[in-house]
Image 1: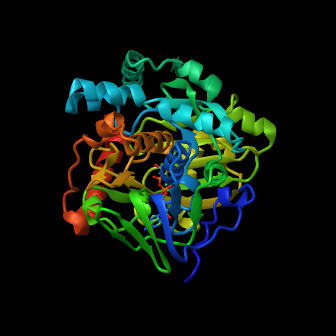
Image 2: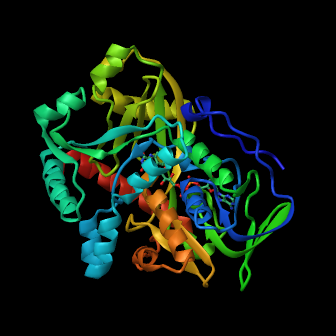
Length: 427
Ligand SMILES: Cc1cc2nc3c(=O)[nH]c(=O)nc-3n(C[C@H](O)[C@H](O)[C@H](O)COP(=O)(O)OP(=O)(O)OC[C@H]3O[C@@H](n4cnc5c(N)ncnc54)[C@H](O)[C@@H]3O)c2cc1C
């Protein structure tokens, strides 16, 4: 079978040493078989192994091949839709549980980095940048909302103050979250994979799950092997395809693109982001950027349907970068790549069980670095019989995309166009 390699990203080019991992051949028995070695799968595996479970992971390509090895690296707290939206759609007790958990993922990441000595350039501090006065009002109410759930370390910044942390005058203000931050995402995934293995877990690469046999003892089939397990956790997210048809109608893979400059002279890098915080703006189709460990600007933006080749990506994302930082006009772009995240209609995660022994978590709709780490812990709790927090996610309502599988992309592209116009008009 042909091997699937990492995309040509800055992260793959600057990854820590990557050990060879086996393909699955023959039959294996385990307590839990996890499908997918991104943050969801790895975080679940660590939490289960720390609690005495036997765990095997099957990964279609390589550890961190999906969004977890290609993302903006931003540790952004809360969910893609905020707690006020959750409060309006679920019972108060469920909203309280979800609100209480909204900042837990960032803490889990930091605990894992410390406990397993993961080298992934962790930096504290994330900025939400307001493009308009209306965004600023939204940030003010978001701060109050988050503080109501005990999440502090937040500072509102006016138009002058934000220029001390982001070297551009395009913003109306912003909010600094010192419990946010950034990491080298692929190195975090690789470090977590090493943690899984240090705890006795096994990761099979180049081993896609092609069928899951349901029943009292589910079996995950790959092209050359099969794993019998007491439980299966499906963590393939936007790369899962149609393996579980019940899940694909209510979620849709979307591409987002990232470019990385050549290393910048230290003075220039410092003039862009003097405290080395990461930044995302408040548009629906948002721009996000930060410095790498070697002073490159890593800049991602929007959702672009169909733009795949690097020249095309650079043509789309570079103008966004120059809008914030015109002084980078002569800087070379060394890398450009694309990755898929999984969107749900509500933009809240799609979580649940199929029968009583197949569990899934996916669809965090763009903000997933922290949520996926929380999801792993919550999934492991559920498999240990403490499902209260898992059920708070599983009970979130989800609806199919209009147009079914055939027309959901054009419909959603239309929706994205509508929100882009709203962003542009500042309404
Ligand atoms: C370009 C980009 C930028 C982003 N930036 C940010 C950011 O800055 N901050 C943030 O919070 N979020 C960001 N996100 C979102 C975040 O990266 C994701 O939400 C998160 O990484 C999802 O993790 P995951 O483990 O669920 O999925 P993935 O990381 O996609 O992992 C799924 C894995 O499952 C494997 N797989 C799929 N199907 C099968 C199968 N049948 N058998 C075996 N294996 C299978 C895939 O190969 C893949 O390795 C970004 C996403 C993208 C694409």
